[in-house]
Length: 325
Ligand SMILES: NC(=O)C[C@H](N)C(=O)O
Image (tube, rainbow, N blue to C red):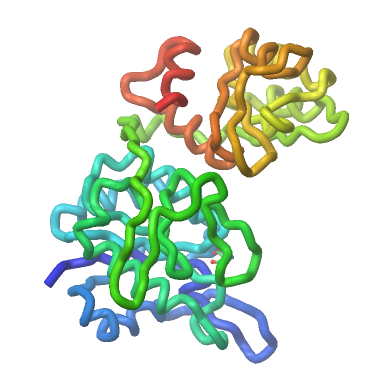
């Protein structure tokens, strides 16, 4: 029988709703109650890592979670991490970029807490254990299993605030499905290259600045005054910015602060195509990095990892190269 380790971090999957309708963190780890129900799929062990809403997780937690997975992986065929859904995709992508593991690592959560009608937590956990125990899931990078779908960590996004079908991969769709009769992978997983990191060099001092109609650079200057390590800018269309944002962008780049360009459009890639002030060609000439199809919050994770890469990227070109993998 396959062996799967379930690492619990908290989130709605471990929460409960009281009679007033409020959803809260519970004192007890309710997921452990599922152990015998999962036994027909795999031998499962539980490890309680934390019991936090996912917006309370910090970079330090995620670094420790990565370390824990690396330490435990040799004893298991697959690992499942239960996680709050609000930041699940960021943790999944961080692990995807930095875990040099072929065996399956699955993240899952729930949109309805443990005692709510139609609670999705147990089914998501069961599906995740099935995926983690299946050799077909190996070498696909970190996977996210929610609502019967198997997604690649790079592509998955939480698209709905409350429905159980909250997760989707807007660029390409899921890699596969969990059916009653088994797991079906219908799409080849996109090849990924793990980036070796120096954990002590990871920083969260990378704000996301959102552009909009006629926005200016005041937030960029605020950020530069707070000694940030990088900026992620969510531009418009292919990553374009209003001209009034450009003095701030130029100043950041002159100060050696990397600027990563993303788009508020959920599909497609940012590319240096248009030549006007704040257009892609302009940003490219000035040295901004294009995050291709990543949304801003995932480009931020990639910049965190790229800045902490081992060996340390020494030039803007080396940093750019870490975004083209
Ligand atoms: N559905 C969830 O898990 C949301 C919860 N607030 C969390 O991310 O911890």
